[in-house]
Structure formats: structure tokens, C-alpha cells
Image (cartoon, rainbow, N blue to C red; front, side, top):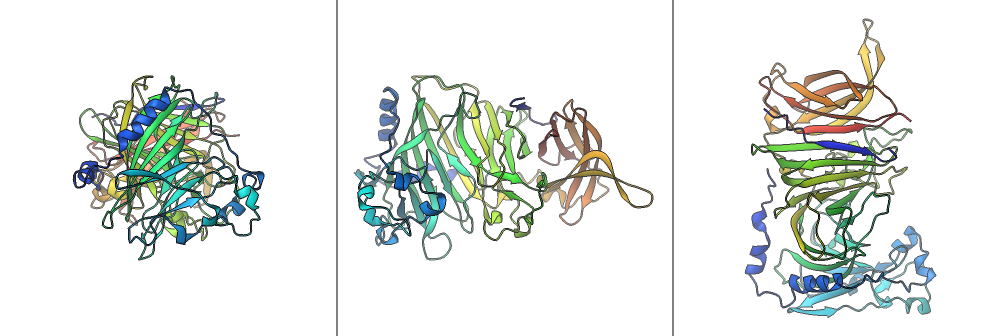
Length: 531
């Protein structure tokens, strides 16, 4: 039988199907109500026209008193809740707004759609509480719009809370019930990790449709602009225990693009037990996501799942994973116990995974993972996106549709017939001597736990073994699979040595039964070279 280990290429630089069924899709939303006079086609027409014009970079008129704010002081500027859009209308959603300041120095035009008609929203400094910041009235008169907006909804109890944010370039984040913001989405990635420099498209205008009192969703349109491309976007937001965001986008190229990334996700990974901190820290892990998960369909119609453990590299890493039949991918936060992090402030245990599920045919391509070195947890250093094999062409619009799932219940997304990686721990490889003293043997050990419904009834004598692969720089010292009675799963203990310690090692493994039948997704990682 085929190994089902996906093709992975590492480029050193310098060197359940979703239980949330797609049948909840957009046709049901729009067939049950009068079609809006303003709709996606209006935004697409603007994007098409804009793509035929020369790009005009946005300019900022923001005074230094706002531009020079640090994060703490910018955060003190808060929109007054009594001025929230639709407040008092007994609607499921309210909208509040971000003031321009710090690096958010360019205004974004925001409109609301009422009875099918677009109405621009007007900024006023009277809508904001500036905290301890001393901003003069003359400086505030120079502000010409909002920086972005928040979506508020009663996720946890009767009172509304912030559950989605659009702020900065084409970035946005969302959460479900009992979650905190973690990984972010983006409208589009262009030339990420190229030496020529990355291009950051921005949402220059939004249209937010005023919902009906019984609507369980919010409809948002956006117009994207950049030197290389324009785009029309529609977001259908359904908050809940898992928050769902259905995205439709139509892109128009101004000129050819070296690298385009669809449905890009951005996250932070500093360290974890799979890559322990180099300094003493009471927190066992610091990350918004600890792995990239990919689901694809093999030629025989079977499911293939890949788990790529994230690393905080010494130098920029780019991993290209060929996926001819993509079912989904995401930056996942699989550990949700407080004990995994011990952080009372950041509460990384409450950060959701973000799963991308195509709802249209994306064709062949690859998932690209970019890992950037970071010294601390303030930087988003992880990016993942879809790269189509057939790049979009100038003059021909290209369409993508997908669902984003913000969840802490990752098991709902998994195939119950395949076990998943519940944790990875890295350690110094050891041997147990006759005197019971452990001695380092010069290898690196990976302790990988697999768990899932298909493993629960299997005993320690079920003949479970591992299929392990390493590249030419990896010397596989040993691998052993043992029953883990605590998790009702199996543990793989893998030892490896580099042939050249200055070069990385690419490793992958899955477990199988005595007949060779695959029991788990494929675990994958990159062992960083020694300094």
C-alpha cells in the first residue's frame, strides 16, 4: 500500500470531515431573504476597475502625537460603548471602531448597508475615550477616519463582547466562546519570504450589512488593494462555540506576481516541549499554534493527514508541501490545558486553532509554511497559506471560497479512523545502564504520543510499529512504539543523529498495525542544525 507520506521540501534560506457541514453554506442565507441591492458584485466591479488603474499608495495625515504612541498608550484609546453602531436596536451584533494611531496611521473607509443601500460612517473624536493620552483638539481635527473595527456579540452570557477584529493591512482575527485571540487570518499574501520583500495588501474599504434581530450571522464586504492586485471579499460570520467565517474572494492582478498565497494564516511560536526554551522559564510552552495540519485526498480516495511540528528556527525556514487534492489546512493549537502553559495573563490554553476548509475546487498546489526566527512572544513568526500550481493571470479574475473554523475542539475536524499527534517532546537521547543510571548516547530523542478512537481498544501486544523516514542527513538510531495506558494511545520513541550537525534533518513518521495498515496521521518535523 502507498506510504501516504506527503512530499515535503525544506528550503533553508541563507541556506470528520468537518463536522460543521458546508451544507450550512451561503445559498441558504441568501435564498431566505430579499437579495440586497448592494452585494458582492458591486465590490467586484470596484476591484476590477481599480485593477485597471495605476496603484496609489495611501497617505497619512496623522500627527506625531498619535503616530508616535507606543502599544500601551494606543491601547488606552477606546471607542465609547454608548456610541457602538446599532446599540439599542436589539440586534445580535454591535460594531465599535479603532482610532488611528501607532502603526495604524492610514484611514479605512467603513460603510453600513441598510435596506440595501450603502451609507458611509463618519468619524468623530467625541466617540473615543483617550485615557491618559494628551491629544490636542487641533491634532484630532487632522484625523480623517477610522483605523478598523470590532464586531461585538454575546458569546459568553447575555452581554456582548468583542469577538472579531479587522485592523491593519488585511489582517483579521476571530474567537468562539471561551476563547482568546490567537492566530490571525489575512486577505492575501504576496511575495512572502522573498528576498525582494513582501507586499502587504490592505483592505481599503468595508461594507457591513445591518442584520435583522433574528439573524445568526453578520455579512461583511471588503475591497482589497495593493501594488500587484485588487480583490473583492465577502465574509459571513457565525459566532458560537466554534466561530465560522465563510469567505468568498475574487482577485484581479495588476501585473504578474512571483508568489501568491491564498487564505494566509499568521501565528506565533516561541518554544514548547518539542523545542524547549534555551533559558530557564516557568512556562513550559509559549505559542499561539504548535503545528501545521493538512488534510488531503489520496489517489485511492483515502484520507491523508500531515502534522508538521512548528519550530522557532535559527534562520528563515520555508517548507513546501505538495498537496494535489487539498481538503483543508490550519495552524493548530492542540494543547488546551492550563498546565501546558502556566500563564495566567496570556492564557495560551484558550487560543483557538484556525482551520481552512475549501468550499470550491482549488485545484492542485502546495501549502507553504514560513518559519521566522523570533527572540520573544511579541512577534508573529509563523505564516501558512495555499499556493496554487497554476498562478493567476493578469486580466483573468480568479475566485476562491473557503470556510474558516476558529475552534478549541480540534478532534471534531479529525478523521476518527486515524489517530492524531497529541504531543511531541524532544530530549537528549539516553540509554539505561545495568546500574539503572541513564547515560546520554549522543542522539536526540523525540517522544511522540498518538491518540484517537481507533487506538482505544488496542492492547500492548497488537503489533503496532512505526514507519519512520529521515533525509540523507539523518541517521535513525532507533524507534520503539509502546502502549500509553494514560491516554489510551501509543507512544513513539524516536532517536536520531545528524551526519552533519551544521545541517538540518527532516523527519516523518506514522504508526501502523501488524498488517501494515496505517493507524495515524503523519508526524513531521525539522531538527535544527547546531549553532
